[in-house]
Length: 123
Image 1: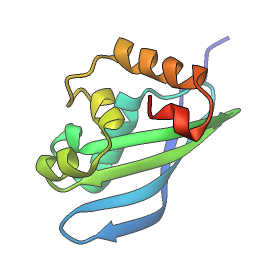
Image 2: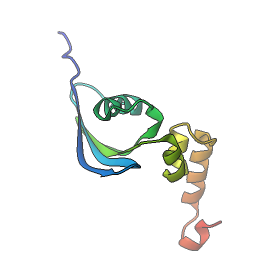
Image 3: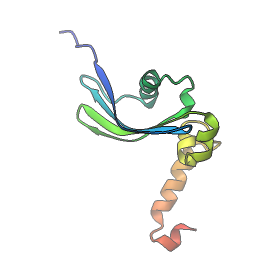
C-alpha cells in the first residue's frame, strides 16, 4: 500500500505588524501523515509567506503538538541588527547568532531548576 503524500498547511493568526521593526504572529501547522516539522522547514514556509530573504531574521518558538496539529509563535524582523538588539540571548543562540553553544544552555537551565526560590535564582 502506498503512503499518502504529506500535505502540510502553515497558517498565520493574530499578526501584529510593528512598522519598521518586526511582525509577531501565531503559527498553526497541520501536518497529517507525518511527524512534526523542523524549525528549518517552518522558517522556509514563513519566508515564502512574508517574502523574507534572510532566514536568520525569522524566529520560531514555543511549539506544542496536538496529534496532527502544532501551534507556536513566530517573529520576523526587518533587519538583522534589530533582531540582535531585541531578541533574548537564548533565542539568538538557538538560531546560531550568539556565541553560546547548546550544551551550555542546557547546563544553565538544569542549574536553575536545582535552585528554588526567587532570591536564590540570582546565584
